[in-house]
Length: 316
Image (cartoon, rainbow, N blue to C red; front, side, top):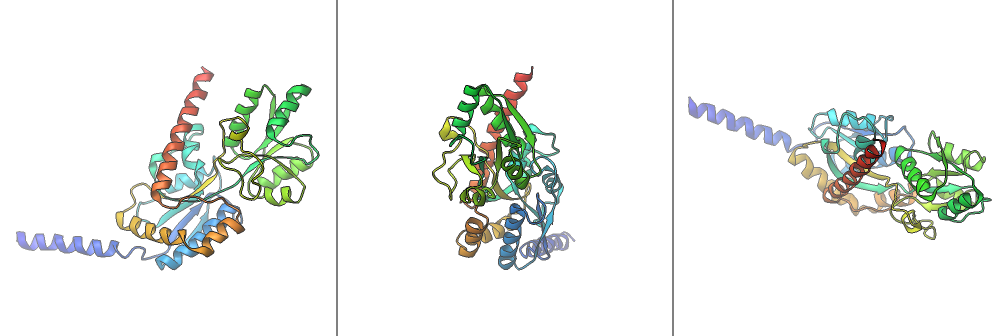
């Protein structure tokens, strides 16, 4: 009887392992934090198509906009079963920023970080007729003239970074929320906002002479406008790190990780996929793979935790 029971258990285990090794056996849901047509959505759909060819199953993109930096999508992903059939594509701030500066039902530790995909390039813009060539000059002008500046932001991270900069410069900053990049561009071009934070959509406007780039808000200079210094290069230890990451629920099975890692490694050298990211979407390059993603997420979460602690202490 014991031999029969042991044999049965072994058969079940072997059957389970064989079943797991065939992942994915059905379509995989890929959540994204934005509406259809947005830059991250386009990246998610390109990734879904590329992974379908690598993994042999459709990757079904589901749009779930809302919350702080995509916290609605992140909440759904955190609660999903860790079987490899629900993944997500989102800005890293959903995991490294929102849990520290907004109320979320998840933490940075509730996910499996598979790979960074690209850097959503962004910067601070103004109208071309403004008498500034850098953001540093804009604040110096405002201080000299005894005037404040109006700033239209896209998220709490760029809002908070600019608020810290303005406070350090001794300039009053009036904050204006936006409904996305196009609304920022309209407000700045129309003179309703002195400054605005815009993503890769800024390239066409700046290169066309309709806007002026005062600072790259990313850690490195923008690939298509390399002459404009970053916030850090202008003297402030600030950056808006709009990295895009492929992520799953915590504790994805080892076999799922193995297949995903192999697929992502091949995409690193896929010229068509990389060209789409860098030339079509105008995203900056990143290091692919889980080790780079995990390292970045941990470092950034620790930095934001420290900032949140300082902010809470200042209120006391």
